[in-house]
Image (cartoon, rainbow, N blue to C red):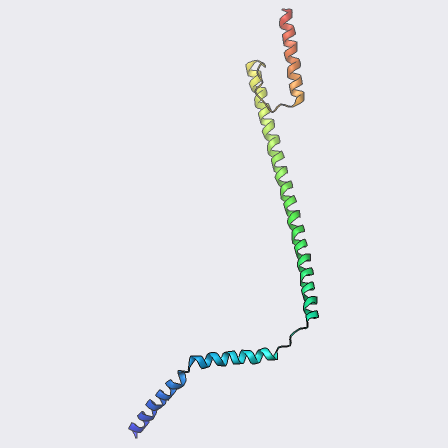
Length: 141
């Protein structure tokens, strides 16, 4: 009896192995057969519906594109404005420092040298008037 049970188990294992080893071509054929049957169940839209849906998609894309463009443009302008504010504050403090250093240097050297190229028109006119007065005073001596 024990031998019969072992024989049945080994024969069941062999038949189970055969069931597990299916022909791969049959499996592929069955797959495509099921795909085809599912494709027949699909209700396809009419050409008019396709055009209508296409136009809706294009309009939505246009609206979203314009919205993104507008937000991008506003952010770009904001960044440019911030950058200009930063540059103007930096330039103003640099010009002030340069002018102060130039004034200090000219007072140390006697006022004859122009060390700053960033002087304003009013400072240039004042310097030229001072030079004219100094030349007139020297000529009178």
